[in-house]
Length: 272
Image 1 (cartoon, rainbow, N blue to C red):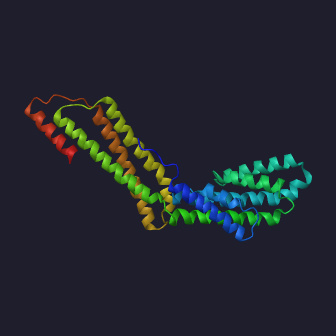
Image 2: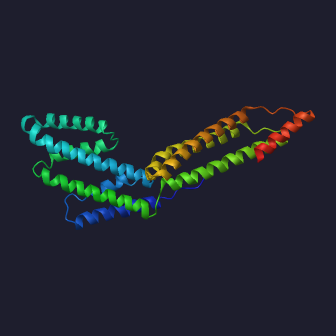
Image 3: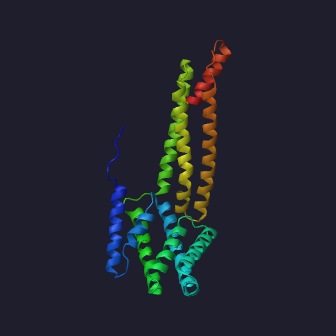
């Protein structure tokens, strides 16, 4: 089995981008430069589509947390004890974050509320804009890195997965045709293993769709490509169902001429 390298190019890209974000924030004279690398680490996903989604979530979470702490501290902070006020603010953060559809962004909002309320309360209205700018710097650098520096795009990954999947299906059907011609059956473990491999690749292709759709343009071409993906996934579902049925069919002796002709036609169809 091939050993994985200790340091990959993704790790190098992450380290360089995080260091660049910290240096840029320090050169701009902004406080708390460590929020830049934190944003890079959270946003720099596997593909451009994933990074875009995570970046938008982080920016929305930062804005939501800033609004809640900016409104809540001068009002609730003056009349409620600190633990109660922070607890109410965090509950409001979770409520509004869920209603806005924030998955990871509400956690960022909660962090902004907790840190702003407890640590930066005296300079809250100068700290919040700086926090937003530092986060924006990290997000933009992460997007730039994943698109230009050793780019990793979900659309390209989807194309590679599609080509590999159709190639694997063709090989599996040809192997089935070859065994039908010989009149022998593969071992049950081998059949199940090959079926599971095909099914796992189909599931990986479906999981890739979320990130790949993020990279699509909202024009007519992007919409047509999305419909084409629907047809592709439907075809693959039918193919895996047909292949599973073929694997369950037993080898039947082909004694008569008509049965041999039927077998020859089946072998020719599968090997095509």
